[in-house]
Image 1 (spheres, helix red, strand yellow):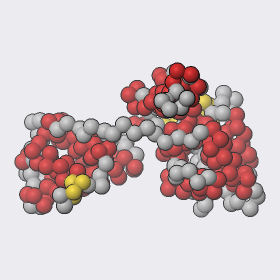
Image 2 (tube, one colour; image 1 turned 135 degrees about the vertical axis):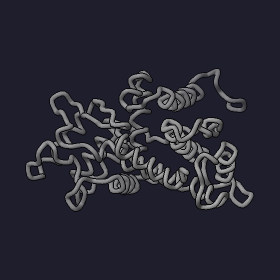
Image 3 (cartoon, rainbow, N blue to C red; image 1 turned 180 degrees about the horizontal axis):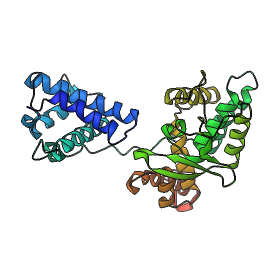
Length: 310
């Protein structure tokens, strides 16, 4: 009997050893599949054979995520969709291994996602955040590091995991490029602006001649900086300069893409810069640009005035 909990553990080991998935990815799958194990155990008991799990039980599991005590759950549709993707991947692995004849999760449709536009900063807000550590002066600890980090996030639109994984040798100052290891260990080359390169040079000049294989950004204890520290410092500097909503590293990535779109960059180029596998993932930035275009039209075109405005 292929017991569910044991098979989930084997699947996570497969992701780590054979797919070389990142710790962040594995942690996400572990969390999502733990919810499935808890639900199935509650319904069927602790010793559950994976062959007895059908699409009806999986559909019931997802339905419970959408409601809590008869009321709407706090889980967003995007979160439910992510959990379904994890379940599909797990049962797909079981099917490929010959432990199941078919993937029961393939019979379940993904929840329709809300069309929410990504939050981004305007130019003035962006400049304020990027310059915040400089304004703080010499008394700000890690000031040069934080300037370089913020500039690089916005200059190249990196994911926070891509930024924390950078080594010094990944920066090509002559070509103005950075070599990035993205999702699925896919490598891409991304341009870096002159301000970011200058900030990185100033930051590295204060370090004791580190080699090219050394981490580009260090945390407080001298080890490679982690995701949590990056998120905390981005939020710290953004809240010091403005009252707009919380800014995350991903906000700077959205801002990078949106500003390129507003300045006329084509969608395919933005897709390559962001490292998106699918163009549909990038297309959300067209909505931001269109919204801006409509706002300008409504404000400037004489035939666009609303009733009662004249």
